[in-house]
Length: 234
Image (cartoon, rainbow, N blue to C red; front, side):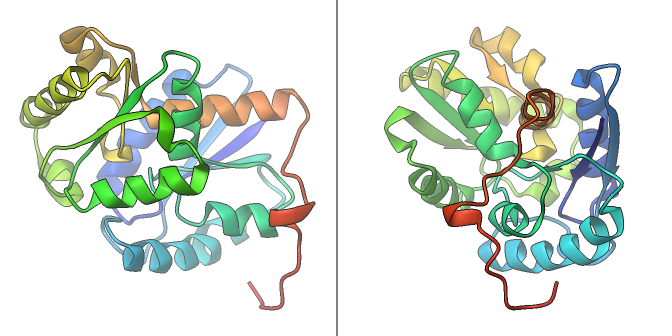
């Protein structure tokens, strides 16, 4: 099996972090290919970023890999372009945001999402309503930084506000914590030891969910929402 893991932004450093997490959890018979577009936003922190990145991902990453991979993982917690790709592709497409939340439901009743920026709080709230999972949410906690900041900070500099956000989430009833940014990939075990709760690395969650779907010989339903009624060229 070949799984294409796409970092929708242009940060090479973040792509390398994503690759490390993805390959750490992938089964031995799974080949992981990690790529990012060459053009577009350095980080995805708004609807504008998301829409620009989606077009570039389709043109620069997805289209050249068609026929070469068995599934696609969108490695951004906002799941940019996930619905579009499910509509136009015949192979499974998963987003790390949705994957993380679905896995958290098997680990506890209430989950919290730890996000980097304050703008991400309403973005995540909107996403949860779209997925119909808002009732299981304990809280969304912001590190009050930007994704670009985190991408340039040391591990210790990232851990301090991340631990604070995790502690706030636990006080609000969280039973499971989700790292709400691909830029936080790899911090799951360190944070879990400090907070004492299960912590989900979203990149690992996306890769494992894609594996399961492929192993069960399933793919996206083309009845209803993701049916192929497309009038534009892609």
